[in-house]
Structures are given as C-alpha cells and as structure tokens.
Length: 482
Ligand SMILES: Cc1ncc(COP(=O)(O)O)c(C=O)c1O
Image (cartoon, rainbow, N blue to C red; front, top):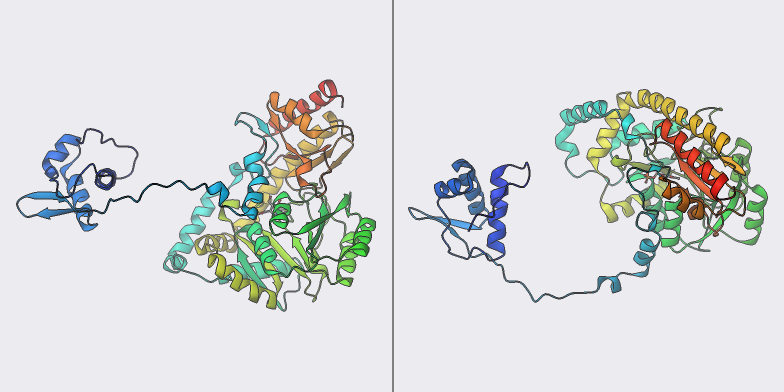
C-alpha cells in the first residue's frame, strides 16, 4: 500500500510524508475510518524514523485528516472528497479582447526562440554577475533587525515612508522642485505607467511619444485603447518639426518621453530639445510622462537635468522611474513623482488594485540606499557597463555596415541598416550561426524600422560581444548583401 512513497526533495521528511498521506486521503485511496499502520510499522516500512511518523500523524490529526482512538491507533477521518462533475470550459473563448491583445503583443511568447548557448543581444537587463549580493544580505538583515515585525505586516498604499523620503531627496538632488509634489511607490516603472493610464481621463484618446519607443509602454498604450502617434527621432532627440506638425493636426491626452538613454535608440535628448519640448507641450497643456529609467547610466558628457527639473514649479511632468536597470529589477520597486493632488488620487487606485507594493522589498531597498551601498555599486557597474558599451561601439564601427548607429550610453545600441535590408531576415541567418538580437520594428509606432535592430550588451562578456558582432557583420557582408 505504501510502497510508492519516495522522498522527492530536501523538504523535511515529516512534511513529505504528511503530503503523501493527505493525497491518498483526498483522492480516495485511503477511505474514511480505515486504520492506518502504527507509527512503528510505518517507520519500518518506509525506512524513516518513528519520530517523523509521529510528527506527521500529529499534524494530520490537527488538520482533521485522521483521528486517534486510544489504545487502537490512528484512523482516516471522513474527509470531503466528492468531486463535482468534471466540466471543461474553453477559456480561450472567455478571455476579453484586452487579454487577447496582451497575448498577441507578448514578445516573450511570440518573440525569437533562442537557446542558452546563443550569443544573445536581446536583453537589456542588468548583469547579475555584478550584483553585490553580500551587501543586499547585510541591508536585509539590518532592516529586519530594526523592524522585521513591521515590514512583514500590511503597509501603506503610497509606499514605505523612509523610501519615499529618500527618493524625494534623490529627485531633489537631480534638480527637481519637489514642493507640492508627492510620490507613489509602484511595482517597477511598468505598474506606474499602467496605473497612470488607468487613472487619467481619455479625451482625444491620443498619446504622443518618440518613434521608436519602449515596447512595454507601447503595449500598455494599446491595451488601454490609445491611438499612438510616434515622432521620429533625430540624433539629439525628437524631430521638433515633426512634433510641431503633429501638434498642429491633433490634440493629445498625454506625451510619453524617455529623454535619457532612450529605449531602443539610446539617444539622449539635448538640453535645447528638452527646452523646446517643454515649451511646446506646455503651450498645449499636454501632461508629460517622463520615463527616467536609465538616467544614471551616463558614461561621458555632462549631466542633463530631467524634464521634471525643467518644469520648475509647474506640475505637468509626471516622472516615473525605477532602479530596474541600475540595481535589481527583481525587487520590482518603482516610483511616480508628480503633483500632490494627482498622487492623492493614484494612491487610491493603487490601494484598490494591489493594496501596496511589497513593504519588505521597499524596506530592503531603502536600507541598501541609506547605507551608501548604492553609490559604491553604481560606480562599479558604470565602469563595467562603460567597457561593454565601448567594446560594442568599437565592434559595430569596425564590423557592421550600418547607415546609422545610435546610443550615447545605457545598456544597448540601435543600428539602422540600409533601407532595403530587413532585420528579421538577417536575424534568421544570425540565429543559424548562434547569434540573436531584437529586430527594431517591434519598437515602432507605425510599422517602420524594418531595417533596424537593437543590440543589448549588458549581460554579455566582451569576447561574446566581439564574436556576436563579427558574426552579424560577416552575414551582412557575405550572405545578405550589406
Ligand atoms: C524605457 C524603459 N523604461 C522603464 C523600464 C523599466 O521597467 P520596470 O521598472 O518595470 O522593470 C525599462 C526596462 O527595460 C525600459 O526599457
């Protein structure tokens, strides 16, 4: 009867035995009032200690699966195991159109399949080999020692106060006027954007952004039913003429901008263009969602202030960011810095949707930032990414016959090939040689960009960068008419 018991993993043995017996009871293999072997018998039968069986039986008794009769042993309790008739709903017919669209736009599901052995330029996630896990552990233990009992309980929808105060100061140091502003902590940048799009009124239903732009943002705009108008990018940011044209033709509910180390082009919008953008969008009273995700990854050139700084005491800029690229995306901590009245409303939306972001994650991040580990870590990762950036630029310049190369910093470069070339066809050939990248068209708002590709280098070693780019270059020159 019990010869199919096998220790499956390294969980305590009594728990594995308990689960094993529970399963037999709930699926009807052990019937109500059936006598169980004595603890001595079962321990012998399964070659485990008697104490283990005793503990498992005691737990099962406490949970109501078995009962003990003095002097007679243990018996199976009358556990409700009746199953309702099995029906099979077709869930593909029951999901709504937004869900179906989310699935259709899901690049994780429909993107390029690649194997572990490949040199993949797809990712722009941080290099986990750089993570200073020891200091994260230290910060965790420190915060737990101070207020473990608090951070494990429910927290506040707006976020963990010490973290908010830290980040407000952090933004102030970037030159942002934080008077009359407030902050909401979110699950990364992405949830911040989602909350905003759910909360703001849709009038024209039109959003203005750079073209190309961040794919996840594009996806959210579409899921929220917005019509997206992308404005082409020049080497120093959005083409202002094209912006003027768009503004003269349409009204917009929102503008979404990534002024620093833009994804996917890596372009940094110049100071003059930041000013021009602010002037034009302010004139038309268009709220700006500024994505500051990569701002810290500057390898050269002078610091450029975020648009939120340019806004001064004005309140039209909603700054959304996270430390997902410079620290740990697994923490899923991001923030929205915006007008007090807006945050007051967003706080309720956040509470209604997810109650709050994980206080434990926020508290750990706070301690890590507070203890100064962030500054040290930032120096280290910037030096490492700078080397990879320079290496990628070098190999692109030497081996890729491109029309335009963009990327002033950050974790990726953007390549524009000759107009006639199709990056997806190139990708097919590259995959056969063990190299993959992101075809650039997924980032465009208007089906353009067929001749573009994004090269993420953050997680690759320099040898891999060199070999990968040489391979792409070789295919372009010799097999694909570049
Ligand atoms: C433009 C842009 N913004 C923000 C993020 C970060 O999003 P999250 O904080 O949700 O991971 C990314 C990540 O790739 C990005 O490319």
